[in-house]
Amino acid sequence: MKKLLIADLRRIFKGKGIYVLMILGFIFPAISALIVQLSGLANDVAELGDLAAEVFNPVALYAGSFNPTQNIGLILLIVVAVLISGEFTNNTIRNKIVAGHSKTSLFLSSLVTVLTYVFVVVLVNSSFTYLFNSISFGLQPFSDYFKRGLVAYSSIFVIYTIMTLLTYQFKNLAGPLGLVLGIYFVLMMISTIVFSFNGGTGFKAKVLFYIFPFLYLSGIATPIKLEWLWATLTNVGYLALLTTLGILLANRTDYK
Image (cartoon, rainbow, N blue to C red; front, side, top):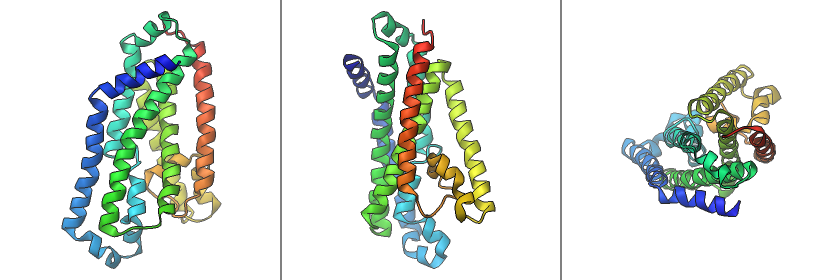
């Protein structure tokens, strides 16, 4: 397992893809910050009302940088899907099995490699988003960023764990990517409707966010008050469950 993981990590860090994404992770927030400065939005946001203040503030923009369907998030999702599926289209998985690696080791190594890849890129993007927007709009309590970060990173890990699990079953690109995006969009639409229908308050409005904390990533019609501890612990539970399920399914699947 250790040698396999080291080889997988070395492969992604030797490639150019992760560094291109890291550069994009700097460019996107830099362009956004430049637009904010040139438009004068940073100085006028208070005059635009409470709704604008809720959207255009450092914490909200920091949280929005984790959205898996916008800008760097969508690019990263597609790149990782190609990366994982390439293990099957290039017969890499089969060769690793022939070399004597267990299916459990294969799945865990792929999962850790994917989550490391995602963490590095997202860390760069979210950190520069935090930095540039703090310069534009001013600093807010670090605890707000910390809580948002815990929920966001754990939510991102849940999504990419699902992606890895599905790829090990479908063994291709289209199926897992389509399912992840499809399920995410459907849940996002339903949660938006339920949230808006219930006026954004009360348990009924937030029920889907309690069940699927990764919906906080959408940034559309989400609760202002973040149930960060519940969301983080729920995501940790999902990670444990999905990892266990992934190992069980991997051991029952024929990769030859």
